[in-house]
Image (cartoon, rainbow, N blue to C red; front, side, top):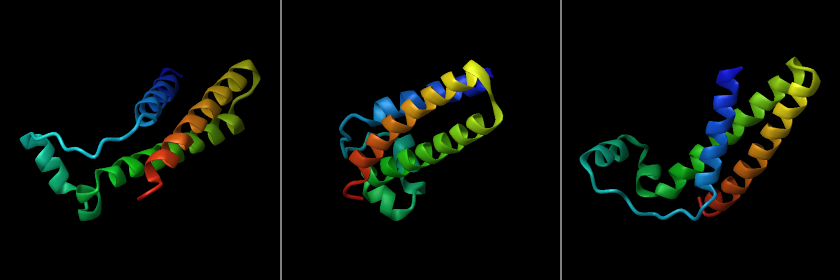
Length: 103
């Protein structure tokens, strides 16, 4: 249960960070240069596309998690977890709309 709550909190934090406007600048460090070089060409040249992809993946994982919780739990704890996940899904959906608009 702790892992699920940690996952939910992590997704919420990701969504909150991602919901802010994205700057298409690159941090000029050797680590970032290597990491960017390892990305597919389209995401390396377009950092917003990489952020968009992360948000889309987060949304998919959160929707899958919600489906499992809704199907496999019951009672008040289920209702609370589903409500939290619904909020996270809404937040991530906004981030997807904001960052994936031009991707």
